[in-house]
Image (cartoon, rainbow, N blue to C red; front, side):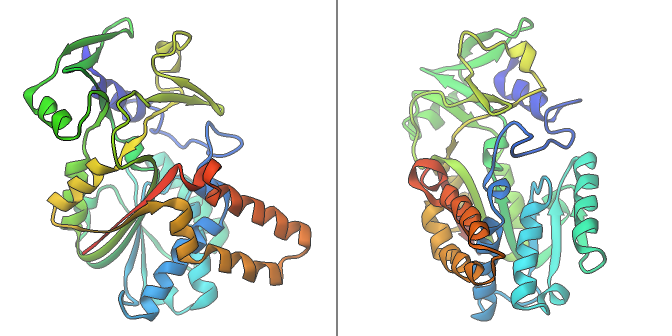
Length: 331
């Protein structure tokens, strides 16, 4: 019998775990992300970075660091936008990916070689602990929901037995104190946010950190944890869900408690710059203007409409726009 967080970590990152090898995202995968939806997502973030560089708020030799880059598409989309606006940045900047899985790194290298040849150099690190940077611009997408979590309910914590059944045991005083502080009666307690925030803070003297994920700045007092497979979703406590059958073969995730994320970074000495919806963030970053510029060069109006519909998916309140949030830290 083991705590649910240990079970989830083994599910995602253990031997033959779900994230141990490269997994397709999008139509052929188990789920969609903002990155797989539209290249305008990465272009918008790069547009914000470009404005900060032009305003001399961020130096031209900043290191662009992506944490959990998966296919490499987000980094690639950002590089394309930076190059199209100021090609000198490809020489002045460093491009870094933090990735633990060797198979994923190889897939990324193949993608960058195919799309950029020798025009750029991507540096790879297995851990943030390996970084010692003066200035960094960190970006990640859907990383906080991939941290293992424990399940809390009325002073008890979930364990998984050898038959893949959930058993409830008394929670520790530390978890009860956390639940009391966050007004949590039922839901997930993420493990590792505090350590991650410290690693980010220790990796760079100055930085901005942007991350998009789904969740809220409060607890729902209900379980959001669920299993994804081929664009189908099962709540963890669904009677029809067979945990043993999905173990390591499907994705498992939950809604992020952004109050916990913000608290972890602020305790690490990092300042919150912004917390807002994905829709508001992307509009502020210039996604509508970028789409307008694309209309001028699109091969046809049909191509433009296709891209416009993808952007709509990113910012529409009833799709990704309000469901996903931006959390933005600076130091």
